Image 1: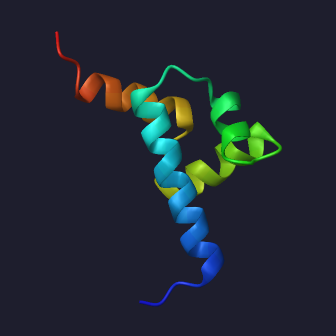
Image 2: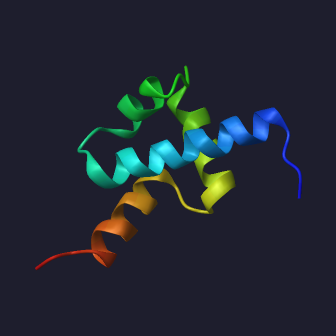
Length: 69
């Protein structure tokens, strides 16, 4: 399957968002700004389109899945 440039950039952006959501305490708005999304709601919509989860839902799921206690 071939991807065009915008798909590769979007996938890389979502991967970075997942990393930031998993390993930092940054808010969704802070992460959206860091990844050059001017609108955090658009970022959330793009994230959901790629992962079928909201950014907060992803963060919650990951923290529950890998809880160390």
